[in-house]
Image (cartoon, rainbow, N blue to C red):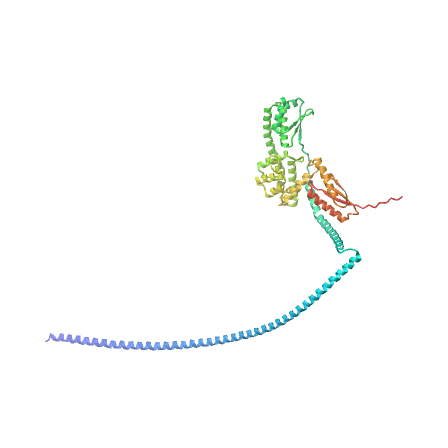
Length: 516
């Protein structure tokens, strides 16, 4: 019994504890529910508050938008009213303009009608005027005894004469003005250049004379049955003239280079004494080699004298060969050196490239070095040579244009042409045949005598001056100037001549009486 009490007490304690725990849990659940309900109620209150706030804000925003929209509507209405008023005003102005245009059209129509009337009146008056003019012309023709065509021709001739006189006076004045500036300057330039360079001129001949030690040498040169002389002529390409002149023979050839080789060959044979075909060929070959060396030396000497540099060795040899080429009896190398020096002097006065001018002057006739070996004019051959050795374009143009065959592209090209003319025109520089000389004089006199009013024409100063005597009663002073100009143009167009030709027209009136 005693053992059951603790157990019962334990069971009762457990039961009571369980009940207590249940009661406690039940109380806790009630508190939780109350808290949850409280939280829910507070959340509902908060939500209601936020909703009320949101509704208030929405109402305020909608109110503001409504006010802005109302203000914008009012503004648009005001703008539309202003636009409507402007359109009404523009319509009013357009109506006024239309009315003014209608009035202007009416005025223009009236003016056009008036003009038509006036035009008809003018036409009627013109017809009447034409009739009156015709009547007056008929009356004038009757009074003057001259037809309309004759009077017109007379007026035109008088007008032509007057205009021609005025043109001649104008040309004369302009020529005088140009001469005041250009003539003195050009004359000073050319005279200065020629004065600074002057060289004696020696005409080249086509024959060379060899002095023999005795007449027996003639026979040795001829050889048995003429075999020696035939060998010399065939090898050297020259003609040997053996005449009655004692102790002398003549070498004839138009090629100075061949003539010089033949002369040295024969002189060497004479000194050696051994003259036979084999020896002639041997000496000839040796002289040719020596001449090639001499040609190079002459070319280098010319280049050194002119102060030029960078010349191809083959071109140097061609320059040296010019020493054995003549043009109208003038040594071409000496002529080329003279042209080069004149070009350099004139280039220095004009501020041009002096060395380039000298180079162009020296090479302007380079084609003549081989013109007997190559077909074509010396100008075309010279241009090809200059291009082959890569000469400057100005040098090539100077070669091509120094006879007027091409357009001159630079001042140096003009200087080369001027210097070439000056060198060729110097007294004694060139030999010209008597026949060509006489023909040139006759042609000058024929040109002068071909003009009306010319009494006599005289060619003077070896054809470098022409004096034309005119009839003073037929030719006045201005016409004299006109004749001189026309002669100048005709001579330049029809004749070929070195240098310049001065034309002087003389008009002289003499009154002479004899007192007795």
